[in-house]
Image (cartoon, rainbow, N blue to C red; front, side, top):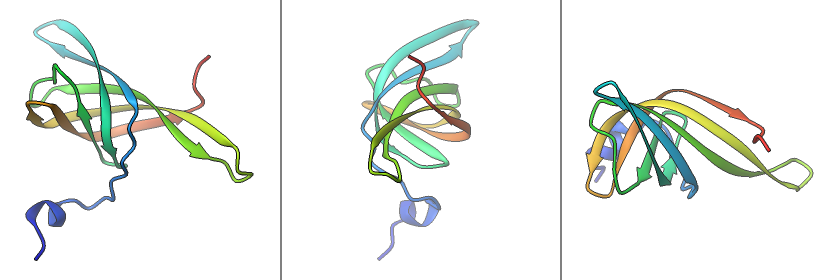
Length: 107
């Protein structure tokens, strides 16, 4: 039997635990916090954090993604993503990503 969540999820999610820096606006103020990614796809992210942003907030996420290059060397990419919070839970939140950028991390 297929669950509703499986039917609605069109993109494969990958468990990528990484510290994430979060930023969003609420009532003319900019809020900052940190969290830990649980899983990531090209269209969404779930983040565990103590102070999740409110439902509907536009959130900026910045985290590192580890990968292996074609020559077998371990490399890291910095992911910067903008999304809208679509679910808030006691231990974190989910956001649909509207856009993202992968780049070499700044030193």
